[in-house]
Length: 168
Ligand code: RP5
Image (tube, rainbow, N blue to C red):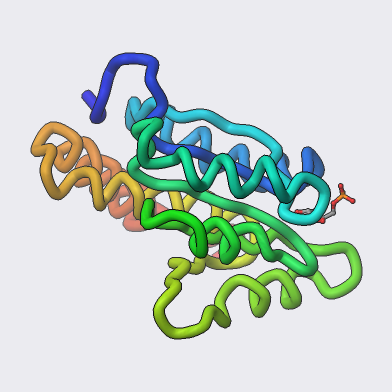
C-alpha cells in the first residue's frame, strides 16, 4: 500500500489552467496507482497570484510533502511556488499552442541558484515522471511503497522484453 492511506492529501497537483489537465491528469493517475493521497486544482500564477502565494505559504502546515506544478507558455507557477515554500516543487512543462512547450520548459528549468525546481519532460511523460519521482522519494522511508515501485518497474521491463516489431 502507498503512503498515507487516509484521505488527507500529501501531494498537491496544481496547474495554470484547466487546459493543462489533459497533461496533468497523468500525474494524478500515477499517484492514484500507488495509493498516494493527493489533491488537484487550478492555481494560476498570473490569474490568481494571491491564491498561489497562499497555497505555497500553507503547503507545509497543510501536510504537503511535494507539489507537482504544471504550466504552459510563460510558465511561472512552479518557480514562484518554490520561492514561497521549502516543500519540494516538481515542475511539468505543458505543451503550449505556439512553441510546443519549449517556452514552458525554459521558463521552468532556468531557476536562479538557490531556488530549485525539479523539472521534467514536456507533456504527458513529464507529468507521469514527476509523480513517479515523488513516489521514489516517499519510498525511501516506506518499504511497502518501495516494493510497489520496484514491481512497477519490473512490469515495464517485462513489457519491453516482449515487444514485437510489426511486420518484421
Ligand atoms: C498558462 O497558460 C497555463 O498553464 C496554460 O498552459 C496556458 C494557457 O492557458 P489557457 O489560456 O488555456 O487558460 O498559464
